[in-house]
Image (cartoon, rainbow, N blue to C red; front, top):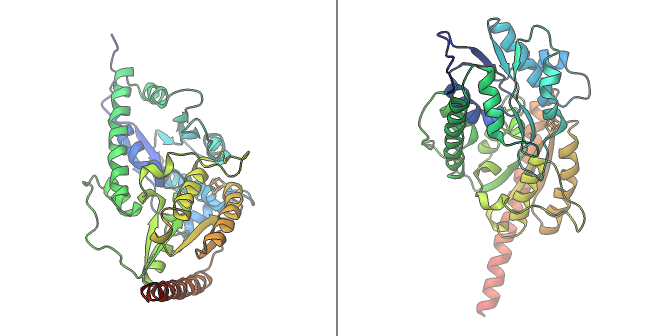
Length: 351
Ligand code: SF4
């Protein structure tokens, strides 16, 4: 019979608010709380955190990883009594694709930072073993039995499924994450941003939902009368069929696969559902720069306005606003012209 080893004092586990926080936090939170630990979350990104991260990250590193460094250091400074810092290793979540190498090596690069407490790992690599196995390993490190860990894993998965359902109902990710953080039920925001244009905003969660590093990009679009859709809001069926780039080539990056699947939908069936696409990418991101070429080519073919914005720690507010305004204006003119052309065509047909 398995034995339980619950100690009276809960272990303190720090979670950096960066990288896959924007994608997996609801799952991690449920899993770790079910394993009876106390969670400490680092604060939203700010100037000081970015500066710290840039100081510790070497030059060509992408800004999201530099922010991760900064967030880890902030946790360590503010909470010297942490027992662990949670740094999961994401290798492969599906058999067909990998995560970017930065995720694969994350625990190794974080453990060499100064004063970092013990790393609490959680490895996701379904090419080698099921995720439940990692949950058991995680539980073992925290002194939990196999049954306790498996129950925690099931509860976390159930909660994560509910979270995804909520996003597909149209909940903005930042709103949903706030509810998770505050242990509130999933309710849609009272005020929905309406606009005469609808854009698909593409990019990694840490680029499009970290409002400090993207200079509150979504708010700038809302201010211009644009409704924003992100891939988290799209139906699950869009992502079920693998993307074939050409007869021989398949993309093998996990998140880029999702971006390409979303684009495939809007190039075909969903063409009339949006008025433009914006892709936010990080400077020095290999996977994104590869697919942005493909997306740009496809957008030209279907005539959908497309804007790519590259961000780094030096991105400036004024330049960003100018580019958004110009793009919104162009998309609005294009939409009006299309509506006019379609009216003329129907008038000719009725003659
Ligand atoms: S996918 Fe790009 S932005 Fe994300 S961690 Fe990898 S290199 Fe950085």
